[in-house]
Image 1 (tube, rainbow, N blue to C red):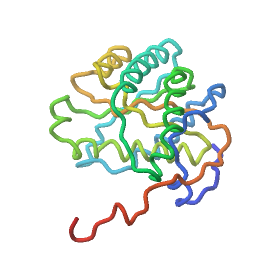
Image 2: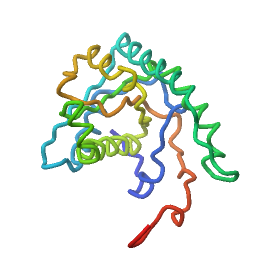
Image 3: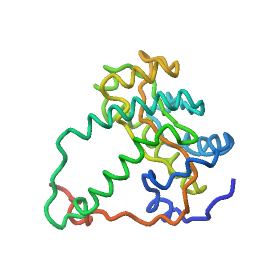
Length: 215
């Protein structure tokens, strides 16, 4: 697979949550999916347990079923209260655009060439009690997967809304994921992107989020 020849800094600063710019028409070869996964599973994992499993969904009917779960939960989420930001806050400036982008993805999730669900071994209670120590054995690998996609001209968006309102169990039943044994880390559309000219996002100045020695 041809690389975009981006530097490490460029990959890190331009890997975006891609929604409207996903190419829903262009197929994604399995070889590309596996090549990115080979890189992703080099990420650290607690006690080197490597308890992850990766589910890639290409079947149109199953993608539609997952999309239905996601869209239903997205509509519920839209009705909840939203964060309020001070005037001039970069997050406030981008909020309408983010909502529009997220709405588009909810409507088109099932059209992505591939949907990916990363899983980690552990029951519901263990995942809740373990918190950061539990998810720390999966999330670095998932982010590495998104970086690998970016470096090859593909993109994704990290979504978790399919997990709420019993959606995780529904997805597990649909895909045969052992619900009592594995937790799902999200639902990721995987596609080539329409263009590769992504830029760093506007973020809060580091001075507003950094602390040394005390808060």
